[in-house]
Image 1 (cartoon, rainbow over the protein chains, first blue to last red):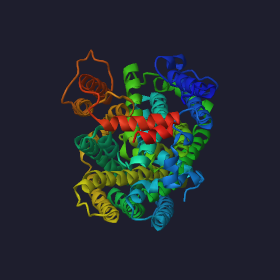
Image 2 (tube, rainbow over the protein chains, first blue to last red; image 1 turned 90 degrees about the vertical axis):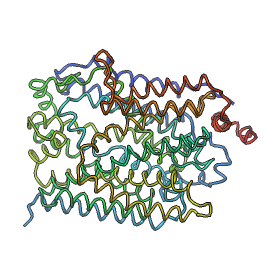
Image 3 (tube, chains in turn yellow, purple; image 1 turned 120 degrees about the vertical axis):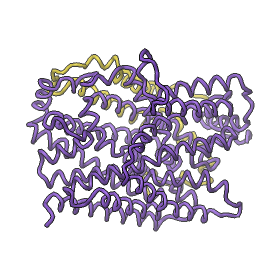
Image 4 (cartoon, chains in turn green, blue; image 1 turned 30 degrees about the vertical axis):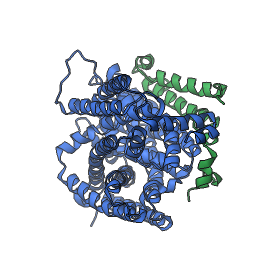
Length: 93
Length: 507
């Protein structure tokens, strides 16, 4: 079954692409001034702001399994062979 | 009588080394002599360890020392490019890494050469890729040792020499890599990752609120006196659009193909672990850089004319914060360098043994013997890298410059082999060899481009040549040359469609 792009996938992809565009030249030129805004250099504020958007986009995407592959895509034979699917992912033993 | 600075630094680094050794020892206790266990941590790393291992390995001495030098010379433009290459690496860690993980589970691949040999049925391509990755990664181990030795010497105010400092750190790294393989490396990375993040965040904010009277005053003074450093293209005009874009694309792609990063794809317990590592690892790496700007620009404002720009961050810390505080923080740079050096040492050993020794060894050689050979090789390669590091050959720095550029050349042929049915062995060989040749020729000045050419970084020109050759040669060749391409691509496509019965039937 091929699933159509979900709203979550589209949101994550759009947010990510938007941040990548915003961090690139020439778009980044919007903030290319020395005079501080909110007490911070506008260019650095721009970098950090869109950097945070990148982080949030990836966290959002991970939360919604927006991009493949996910655990659900892994053929059962792999889990059966290794029994890894029964582990708690947060553990590290 | 050692000074306060030397005493604090020695105690901090000493405690850090004891903790790291204890963690590495624990990694050895739970490990086995199976190849998968030593080289890929039994393909069973969970989220917490993989997250910190990815992040600490990704951020090398560059994150603590190199970035300071870069900002000191060229302003803050590097942060935008760095955020972009980190973001690209994070996305690829998930999307590409999970596919590499699945194929590793299914077919037993560990190294990039394993996968490429299987995809294109070409031992030659596998060997070529392996050789390139070993050659460009090995000098980087020496670079990390040079960085950690210099930090040791600076932090102890010369009490411990560069040679002794680098030697001590190498011995500790070799011990736990030898003992526990990737599991020990990953566990120690967790300690190192926490330490270096905490050190940078505490240092940056303490600096800006104490020495610089708060962020608002700090930025206002910079805008008044050093405006070129807080705008593009920077004081030297380095950050042109062509340079900026080609830098982050090449570094982002190149980082994902470095063997010590690639091994983490196959070492994950599941795609879920990779997915969350991509999300939180990217956040860690980006947020790490936020306070770095205060220290790097602080050096610009307070210490003009530094002879060694890479020492900007340690120098400004010792100049404007209490000695005991600076000593502790600068020890974090040791963690940054060590967490990358140990991973690279392990990765180079793994590539040499897996891609070169194992195929040549007698078929009767069992897994335990292969692992023992790998363990024996760790001190040998470590010793070699130390010998190179203490000589501080100039060419080592040149070789390190091509590491990411050449690692990036693996990407088109690997991704092409996973998604493009018409990819061919001849195309992959031509693309990879052409890309490496172009990137290296331009880096070492064997070929000079006309002044009218866009100012892309050499690795980006290599990528362009790589893709053009790969696609061009593949397009004129036979698309059905390698049945294994269809097998692998079919398996991945069936997984994404969750059409598993069909994928089994296609075997």
